[in-house]
Image 1: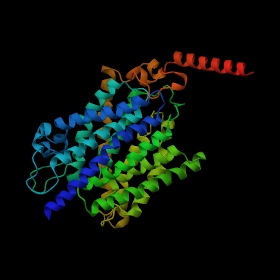
Image 2: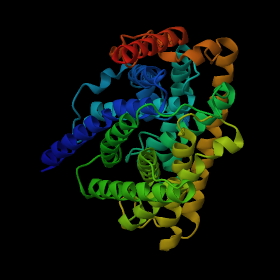
Image 3: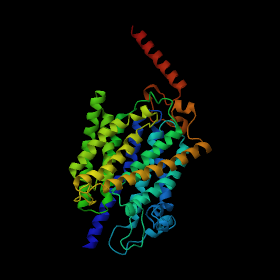
Image 4: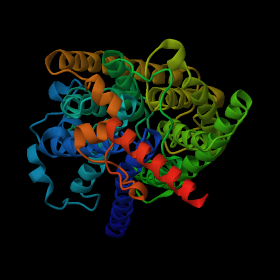
Length: 450
């Protein structure tokens, strides 16, 4: 029986792994559709290349730093040399259970996606080389320690000591509201403070392909069931409750955003629906194992509504969050993590009781400490990394490259080939020549017709 259960659990996590892996192209399409046609490939490349670099670091020592035995028992960082290269994970476990190699692969996806989230705030103006160096340093100095705090649990026999947030503090974070979304959101804010605003900040380019963005959001939606449901680490009732809460929050988030958008702007937009979906998914990530389905509706609706307001703060406060990473991931992550302290029900998988369900204020205080700790550490270290890189190699492309678009200047490619007029270049000179030629041909055709 134990072997059958272990096989079922392994099959479920393998399926969840596959779903989460699709979040990488999903995020690339989601971000790629929201930028101008001149920077689409750069946004896709930042997503994929950043993810790939973190994957390499994860295999080398990242898994050890996150899920290894805590150095000195302090709960701050796992021993990076404990599973160096992951060769120790090749053998099957002695007792029926999840293969350690599967857990390592599953958590690799979390690490890579978290780093990739940050790049959306930096669109249209950051050097690709600087991004790659930043992604590697940030993963090592910020994500790996914070993920250890949150995801590394003490072993039952006491032989392995995990992170301080998961064990000493005892905060509830089912699938990564703190380590993933708050971490990425506040890091994005720190980098854009150093990076500065786009030249077009007050008149940003419109999304060049909303269908592409919605497709990316749909793929992310699919992958999120593996992200949250797979975090149950078993094919059981807990995973079932988690996926139910995830879809309930998603529906409420879309509705919440569209209602606020309609009241404020007079239109319910496609981009708003996609954004409301992601905002709700962000907020329910830490809370999916702690609340009831009714609570999930509340979490999703509040996330959609609040994040819709939050994305406009960048214009009032003057920070250029290009694709609303701060407004959605930071705000949504903080909201979802804190709402656990109010809405958690003891019957849910996490087994905690919030203030509204007889648990007192203690859990809310615990959640607040976890949020503040991640905010402070991630912001300070990220700012230091970004400032150091800016002094050493510079973070921004030159003004001409920013004006021309990063696809051709940085990558030597264009997202689309304009076969209708035989034009494949993107510079202003070439574009002007093509426009003049097209006008001349049109005028000639009109004259011949007359």
